[in-house]
Length: 588
Image (cartoon, rainbow, N blue to C red):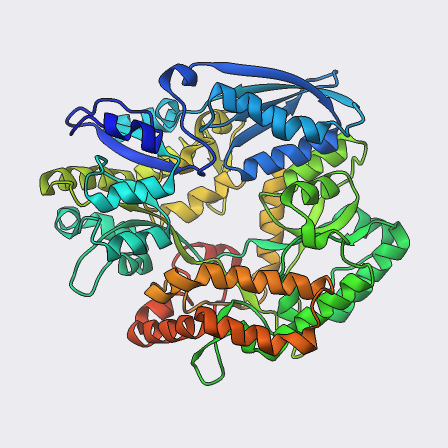
């Protein structure tokens, strides 16, 4: 393959000569703010020392995690020195110091200097991670991993037909755009050489990547039907005051009133304009649903939407919802939960550990979290949305030769084999994890985190049988994470999950309009909640604007897709993994 020096400036990649037989893979997508490290920078570490409180470190680490960085934190025994290792894959040395100067320092300026923290920033290069070396041994294929930081530049490069990579990781909207521009290669001939590839992938994502003329354009990471997000609440505060989990919207309202009166804390914080856990009480789930006539409709047309907005508006006016709800960020939410200022917020198994750590370090030794699942509507039904759908996708530039494509698919085939997939994701039984009597793997520390923290970054497609079980070890990287995951899924499994017939939908109007229309809805909803818009006086006009700005085209496109793809629609209402057996899910 050609040298790629011409890409250095525009894509900001680590550019090296590519030798025949060495695969080049875009292993992860960076935000446009960041750029990849050079080889020289990768070998360096930077350190900075700051003083701040436990709550602020928790808030900061959570926010940086959301920015796409990887963080670990531990407290040195018998000292007040906590070491937090930030592993930013896309920062230069100067950018690291800029981050501290412009982001961290201002946050810490309000600190009480209760604790002294020591930071080590270390670049992470997937080429040096253990799974990369393990995969080379297991499969016989050597893969080189690069990052891109400019999505627009990438799309231009791909569209030009000159991108010199074998596989590129993209999101679903990018896939649709590239497919429409004929910028990616039909991998059907290469995949047909390895029929095990399609056998090991989930059926719906194989169909998603296929075209009517028999083409096959992507290896897709699928998301199976599990339930992951609820309203996380302080279980220790509930126990102290004898509160019970609410089932109805009235019980939830009464609970918030009691929390406000009894504790003086913020009963409910967040920043979601559409909070589906509460929306369930009004019959709401997804933004596009099937109406009683079986036709696609928007949640804007459901009577429950105005009822939901009215309830949120009134609760906000009563002081039951954080007064900063409309302007909260993930930083402020995390700070409020980690400092004990708020009791309930939206979250999942990935959110609670930083809060618990900060609370316990500050003296709340019993602080912990459990979850409230979607509330019952007037008929006693909980509208529990499930998470199945399309994840990241791996496409091949159009210029890749047929011979090369076959070689690359050979690598993919080896990674997707059950034993290989299991091993590079969670390691060896007895060394990196144990397996209990129910067949669920549990990590062995520190061997698991030392070797497999970033193992999920090496997935190219997901083995439909190995992934759901192997992932159970990955969700146990901390006891708190596992407890949150199990609590919320155990509760949700007692009720039917509502499948989404459009989970695997792909049509032009969605790519063109959905993002802008979603933002429009969120902006309007938040204005109503804050009392800045009169719901009764403006709602109909808002819906009309939504229709005129692409809403009707979105509904029309969704209906056409649904009519043309009944089997794909059915996939969105089924579970193909052992999760259904583990938790007893019933999907309708």
